[in-house]
Image (cartoon, rainbow, N blue to C red):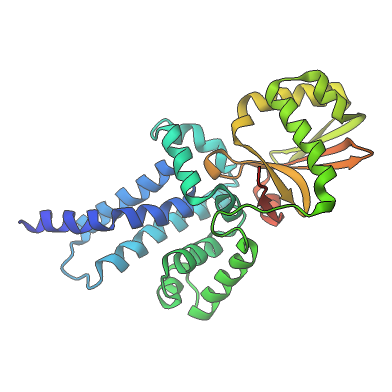
Length: 290
């Protein structure tokens, strides 16, 4: 066996774990594959002669690649899921959905609300048992600070970190009934059923590009819901949004938007659609059971 063959064999032994790290960091199968491939290219350039711990070296490289991508997203203030169609042209959408299911949509949704450093610290330590001493230089922190990052992330993920979904409190049952009716009607394109759960003067607010736009009236709101559902219905999930029943839209588990509702007298009076990454990061989210 040549040196190149030996190196390739060792890399393949680590590929599954590296891809697992990258997928939980990036939430996209295509981007995870790209990160792993970039790690292979860097390994080829570096050679294995000076690397004592190949697994640790590769995990560090993949983590840095993912961290750079996450930080670039925040700097550009991208809506992460706007990139999904391009990613899915490379990876089979069914395979992408299976990946999300295997990790847990609930976990991926919550991970999207963390800062890059929090997400990396939590994923590496809590999901892959990487010591904080090894995480610290990746996030440019001390081990103590890296531990604090993971702790903050854990508090947000706690109760949902294994992919389990949350169960609403009994007093949320009425909210859930209304939101379920709204979501079912939107998915079915049932205009009349949507109008029936909306207050005649309902207000819908959407923070498009950081600018909040509002529409008023049940007919306009119902039309918009039907149009949006035609694109995003398969990715919409009932969720607790800041403790109230709402909806998250998360194709392949990647958080695109959260929808909050104000309900009075069994009708929806206000709909707040949150897409701005900074606002999404402030929300407490938990996907609800069916």
